Image (cartoon, rainbow, N blue to C red; front, side):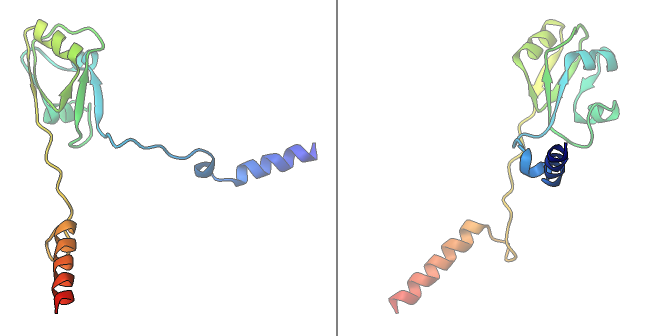
Length: 134
């Protein structure tokens, strides 16, 4: 019985991060099913990030992907970041239209001088080559 208690204490002493490492995906955003949209939208409305936020389906300005799960029969206009093939088929069958918004370009972080990291490395390499020639 005493050995069992010692094992239990040892187990609780090890942090959960060491036992179960956190696995993160580089994808971020929200997945919404057509069934949820069917419940919260009236026919003729536009589904985009602003209206999804107002209806309480997303928080802030997060990317959204629409999936085709659930019943769908309303004529809605979609302007979203991504949509599955089955969802697009259901929306078009109901008479709605789908517009997939292009993803924003990634902005590279700049250093204090306003240059990207590659530009700084290249400038350092050129300066080093000039000093080596002298």
